[in-house]
Amino acid sequence: MRLFSMYGWVRSRHMMGIRSKGLLNAPWAGGVVLLICVAVAMLLANLPATKLYYHSLLETDLSMMIHSPNGYINWIFPKGMTIEKFVNDGLMVIFFFTVGLEIKREVVSGQLSSVRKAILPVMAAAGGMMAPALIYMFVNHGTMAANGWGIPTATDIAFAVGILSMLGDRVPVSLKIFLTALAIADDLGAIIVIALFYGGDMELMCLLLAAIIMFGVYFLNRMGEKRMAFYFVPAILVWGLFYYSGVHSTLSGVAMAMLIPMRPRYKKEYLFHKMRWLKSHLLDPKYIEESDDEFPTAEQRFYLRQMRRLASGSMGMSYRLEHALSPYVTFIIMPIFALANAGVGIDSIRYFNIFQFSPEMGSVGMGVFFGLLLGKPLGITAASWLAVKTGVAVMPEKASWSMLFAVACLGGIGFTMSLFVDSLAFGDQVDFVNRGKIAILMGSIAAAILGSILILLLAKKKTN
Image (cartoon, rainbow, N blue to C red; front, top):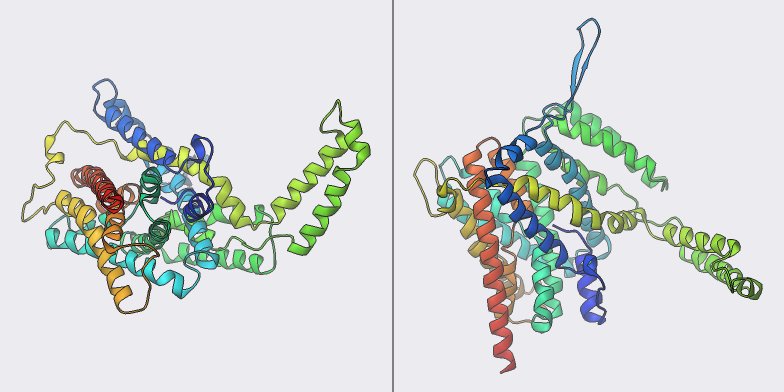
């Protein structure tokens, strides 16, 4: 989950000594809210008074049915849309859109903007995806559970960076930046996996129409169009076409994010010139004298509005949307996603036996749990070691291999994207889906505990 500008947070708070103020700005706040929603979902799914209503609510049909008077036309839209599907295929589009904006920003001007910057986190992310997938396939090859290999390959940046923030200065800043860049590259990998391996039968005509619309949006971008309505309406159309195309509809959010302009409306020279002019009028002595009893005056409000408009237009639409959407994604969309997807009925204890295995069914629990707990840190560390030893990348500043491994353990916190892939991998196979959810929760908690303990031990050893 990539909800705030994590790299920007790490750099500004730790390299410049600035601290966020308020609960909503705390990097761990989103993770805490998600954990609360997971607990609430588990209660709703298991309390006798609520479990029936909980599952019935998620299965409530939201599709609109249109009938013609003569009965020849019967149209249902969106087809098969339940509340649970609305959350996973509708609201999650905004999450993936935000992910796409952050990936684009990092590729254009951030930690993935050059080969030198990107090589270590990209290779580490690749290793951190391959090793869990191999562990899962080793356990489940040839079984009915084999399709879930993508579940343990994801990293949840909100939880990982939240834990790093609570550990304070025990972790070098370079490793915090490394983990955030790795998680962004991991997101890109997860999107590719979903697009290639977890779609349905494709409707090429829908994809062709979506491609035509996106080409039109790209043309508008190149022509310098920066009004949001010209991007919002096509985004709705592209989502609908993706929904019926067989490619998961959430990927339309990523595709549209890549087409959002990053160039600002106003250039630097115009901004500075106009700001100086507005400031000179705002600080005019006659307005200052008049504002003793009323501040701001009508004239001052005019100049302040102009400054706000100018400041907004001096940032690209992509940056503005990422900043505006992030709090809503963190504190509304992701909690709703957790409420809708983390509710597992525990009336059968078999879901918690992650070591249960059969030659026919395999073991979703073992594959996911050990993929997150062992596969992630081993894959990240091995790929990083290979990149550094071959000379294609350099070790993060003031970092040791033991501390890098400890931080890599936090990469085993899968949660959001893992839950999402779990629902895609097994669909209506409720038993597998529930086993995957429990294993994701247990594996993520175990990875968080292991990583935190190792970091604390290494930091204590260093100070002694």
